[in-house]
Length: 337
Image (tube, rainbow, N blue to C red):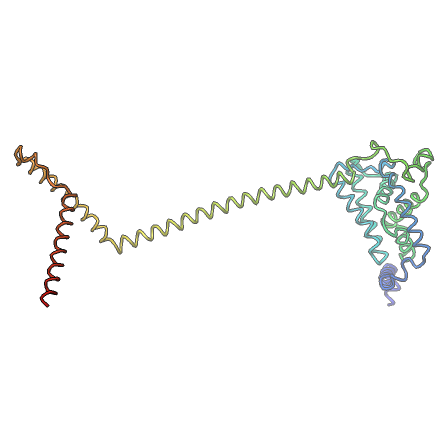
């Protein structure tokens, strides 16, 4: 402990850890302890809602929203300043604010092509707050002021960003027609919603509807590419299945032919022998007929030879005669008995 006391840096670090622990454990009691702070937060949120038209061109934020990376970084900055309310320790809240402000500086550098000055950073931070309307922002500022080490808020990067946040909130609370160099009646008409900001003052590229449309088109394009890839894979798979099916059928066909050639080769020999016999018989019949025609006389050739139909008819008559003969014999035997 004596070493910690003799080392100011170590003592400050230990003190910061102890304060962080206490703030986290007692956050429900320490954060926004007074109802007046909650009323002030609600009043500021209503004020920011009534000033939504200021983001339509009344403030020169310096962001080039035609650049996709600038738009993506802006969305991350919005997320960081909103998440500041979800942290319980003052250091975490400051870290979230620091990340948001760094993203704003990066956007300004990419949009303008050079490092932004403090005079260019403050309007950009005001624009982010007006677009975001972060919850309980005043209570978060007071919580950081009460429980963060004064040395951290009075110096360093986090202290610089915190000071700019306080200035931005003060500007929004005191914003009037003179601040925007407008006529008081016009300012009040815009604030009350009686007038709508002219379209030529609205940065079309940063319009939420157009951003949503671009995101939808990008999603559809990505889906179309994935669908084309899927269709190509389906075609390749179908080709593979067809090729494998053909190979499978070919293997079955080859296997069957091989077995038939090995086990039933004699059937092929029988078919060949039968074919040869039929050929020889046909040739023999033709030769016999030719010789018979040569030996017959002219009168004998005029006698018509019996046809196949005549032979079949003769066979049927002969069969019928045999049947009748057998029937008569049976009848004769029955009479004798």
